Amino acid sequence: MPDLNSLAASVAEVLKESNQNLAVAESSAGGLISAALLAIPGASAYYVGGAVIYTRAAQQELLAVADATMADMRASTEPYALLNARTIRGALGATWGLGETGASGPTGNRYGDSSGHACFAVTGPFERTMTLETGDKDREANMWVFAKAAIDLLEECVREAN
Image (tube, rainbow, N blue to C red):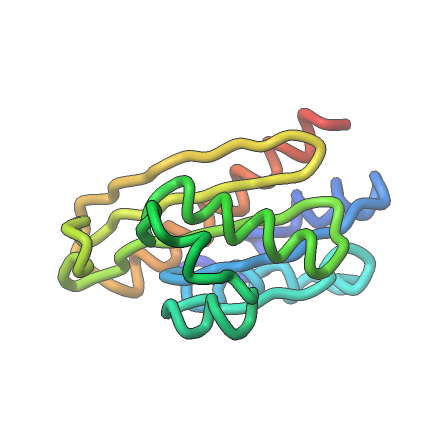
């Protein structure tokens, strides 16, 4: 099992050096993305806040996403991850927003995605999305892979912007 510090040390350093900050809306990673970012000493320099948006109710109440906004969208997609990243970034006034959504396992989700499916979005000076399929049914293993993939995508974007 990876340790939290090693997942985010590199991106934390880049965010601190560039005086940029971040807000996180994660789902199937279950808080591991935020935990990894917060495990680094001095996290308050770059981590504004985050939420585990695990259900539609959480999205409605914590992110204030209206039903009309979700009319032609479903969870566990790149557009959904991007919506959550944009929304939390705007709500917290962060330089960057990071969104993650998926199906950690051991079964797929009600939308037809298999276990190990996750979508990620980073928004800030520019936007990037990606989808990952691990093919694994191991819930915790997928959560760690999702957290790493999200943090790696974030670091790629932050480095590209600098």
